[in-house]
Each structure stands twice: as C-alpha cells, then as structure tokens.
Length: 161
Image (tube, rainbow, N blue to C red; front, side, top):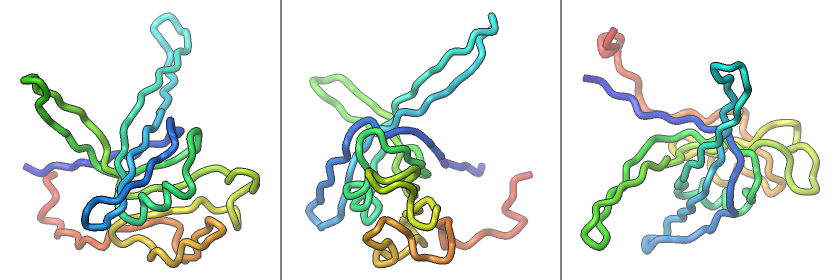
C-alpha cells in the first residue's frame, strides 16, 4: 500500500531559533510555529483555534533560520511528520513533530520594508538553491521561486487509482 507523509504549515514563529551544531558539524535548530484556524461553530459564532507545532530544521535551512528568523516572523514550512518516542522514569513518552525540508520566509525584514524585488525567499534542502545563491540582503538570486526535489518520479503504473 502506498503512503504519503507531507505537511505544509503557514504560521508565526513562537520563539527565536537557537542554532546548534551536532558532532559531525551539521546545523540544526528547533522552532515553534503557531498556526491559526478560524471556523464557525454550530451557533454561527466565529472561533479562532491556535495549534502549536514543533519544527526541526537541518543543514543550511537551519543556518538561514538562525540568521533571519525571529519570534513573531511569518513563515511557511514544508516537511514531513515524525514521531519521537522515549522513556523517562519508566514512563513511555511520544511527541509528533515536523521535520522541515523547505522553508519560505514571508513578510518584511526588520526595518527593511518589503523583501528585495518583492519576492518571498525560498530555502530548501534536496534540490534547493545552493547556499551561495542566498545573498546577504536576504533575497534569492535563483531563477525559480520554488524549490523542487530532484527525486525521480515513478511511472503511471505506480499510481494506486
């Protein structure tokens, strides 16, 4: 049976990222994202519900988040769900989090107005822009405004429907 694990979130960062490096030199940062959902109740009243999501970013994406993302920043994350499980004091614990594979900075930079050339700044992992294409002004110098994975696609025979 085929499976698909993809998450796209758009929200505001709940805390400043703390960039760290693991033993092999790979950058990693954890951020919190507040995602709001507005819906109407059965009585016709509008309610706002906020969901707080933990996101882990790796590599160059983590470094860029550490440099450009601050608490309150609007951010779009695309990634996958991952279930972490551990045992503490004989009790089993688990937590669902998002491993961010692509990040798009939204809105304006502090004191800088709109992003350069009026574009959002995409940042990705596999198949994303090389690190040197993300210029110091925070703009992306690539021709494409989206980051695509270079993974090969299967044939039409692989489609389950």
